[in-house]
Length: 359
Image (cartoon, rainbow, N blue to C red):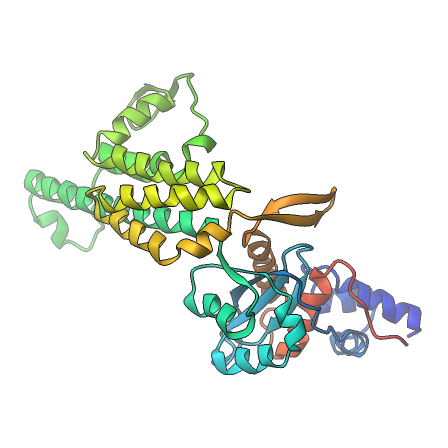
């Protein structure tokens, strides 16, 4: 093959959804040949660290040693700086220690979730940086707890429904090999289908006012009707939503104002600790534990997007989308056994302007 054909083959690897076998078929050659060409031209080096970097793990599970790989991303450009084989300390410590001190000292913000080893990177490797806990993961903590509350409610109503069914039909129905069909109750129906009324942010909800026929209730209902029925299922449900919304509103209105957020979070902590509800008392303790990294998440910095430069709040949102691409690549390759090859493919496909080896 000519060098031009080789470069066309290499360029085909820019698409994560494209497999080596489909590239080989397109160019009428073998899988082994296109992989060899890619490896010959592509050797992705680590990009320099910037003042704002994000870290997160991605589940590769290539072998017992490489279960969770670590992604490092430039927050300003969304380009992945590197993909490290494992997030284990015996891998990350020599990796970060090998980066020149001057480069590590330039980092001002390290963005992560609430995984404590990531937060500890600041003290270990980046002496001039502060830790930033992504706001999405803080909200996710509340939503996950409320979802568990709903799951327990569903379980209790299903147990009640089964008991009522037994009392009405007798135990013999449960002794046969045939599955027993217990009609779904109003409570279970509402909790399963309309849990979003509690879990979603009120600001993002769109209530339909035009009644629509509901096959379960056998009548026309609008969203306000579901809302009334849903929040009547448990005496604490409305309080839970309002307490969740206090944080959601605090999270939105203080973007770009870490000083104001630092003042307001103290009142929020008092509110949650004295709420009388275990879920929100624990949430108050969480805010105390991660208070400084949460406040740091309200800082705005410049990012580069398709439309140019704009101000953005520090978050792990960009790295979450990159992690999905890693999983897509893993599916496309039907499992990788060579980490270095996968790393090269991932970085080559996700960087905006990747360089290749000259020929």
